[in-house]
Amino acid sequence: MFHYRKYILHCDSLPLPTLVEKYGTPLYLYSSETLRARYGVFQGAFKGTRHSVCYSVKANSNLSLMKLLARFGAGFDVVSGGELHRVSKAARGRLKQTVFSGVGKTQAEIDAALRASILLFNVESEGELELLAARATKLRRKARVAFRVNPDVPAETHPYISTGLREHKFGVAIADASRLYRQAARSKHIEVAGVSVHIGSQITDVAPFRATMERVAELVLELRQAGHDITYVDAGGGLGIDYEQQEGISEPIETFKRRASEYAKAVLEPLQGLNVHLLLEPGRALVAPAGVLVTRLLYRKQNGAKQFLITDAAMNDLLRPALYGAQHGIVPVTRDPGRSRETFDVVGPICETGDFLARDRVLTDAEPGELLALLDVGAYGMALASNYNTRPRAAEVLVEGRRAKLVRRRETFSDLLAPEG
Ligand SMILES: *Cc1c(COP(=O)(O)O)cnc(C)c1O
Image 1 (tube, helix red, strand yellow):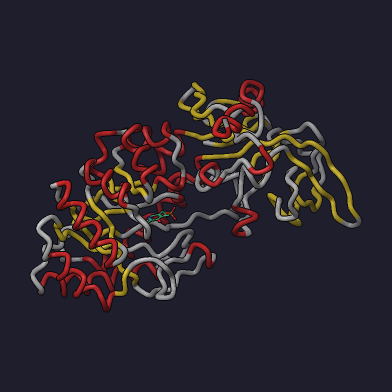
Image 2 (cartoon, helix red, strand yellow):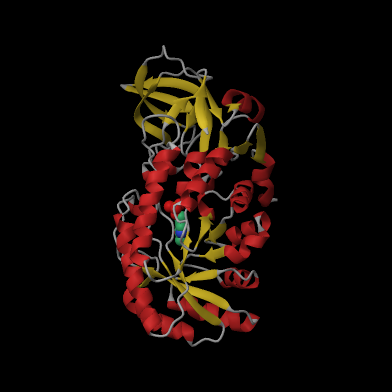
């Protein structure tokens, strides 16, 4: 886990300055201990219920992290053919524990998933059902299907990551569900198997999850009465983390235990007596606190009343502050208790005013050359990174016990130019 020892930030048992010496900055650094602990807590919150954890690959799709999660027992939730390909590379045996979500699956992606014999297609429109039925017939495969229903439940989160309202592009209206299930059941190559939802991301109040599952439970009863064999309920992902927690570096595991168990209660209670196999698609809650982004301070400068810290990490490395106004904790890698605290904007070198990592943030004073760590970036950090400004993407390192493993090398300029011939 991330902690200070003698004023120096460590990842598990390794000091960050040593890792930076070897791997450079900007650097994504992951703690396998944190990941293992959080996976254990999450999955433990559902013990006693038939369930599978299908880790949402889009939160962090690094192959080594996926392998680690597969070793813990996870299946996967994918939203593209590329992510499906990653599952086949990281843990081929887990394709049969993989669910496929997404509003715009192409024929090629559907074919690949049929050939891989995945566990479940979360179908999001009538058109997709028709294409899936046609392709399954053509390839002589059986497709297990759940419809992703839109429960019309508001989730208190950033509007870009709220997905469960009628006006969003996701899912099918519950009112249309019985007709769609009837239609699905008519195809010989479709096996109606479940009901699926996903109402959004970074949701910290469990009430919307409960409200959603109440609607799902009603629908399951109604579908069973109509003769459908509903085995699976896929509750989606979305459990949030506390990005602004004050004490310590990572959320204490005890806090997560409490929150995971509250979440489990909200999901499970409405389903009581239905005897379903529950599928869960957590992303952020498992991996966000398992990662930090280490950056070196390049310059400081003052423009008018504003003080800027200019770092070698930028919005191409970590988009969340610019995209969602996300507030990631920022701490010095080497702590000096004698330093004052001042208000800074932390910005990268990219030619955009939107290129900031923090705004008007009270931070410990820092000098050029020193290292800072951005916290809780294990989810939607590297996954959202780009090459904007022809910036090579950062290296990723996974710490396992006393060993650090480079799990993605830093890109080179030739990597970037290669597709252009
Ligand atoms: C993004 C996504 C998830 C994971 O969401 P988190 O907030 O990271 O837990 C799960 N299921 C689906 C369908 C998604 O699109």
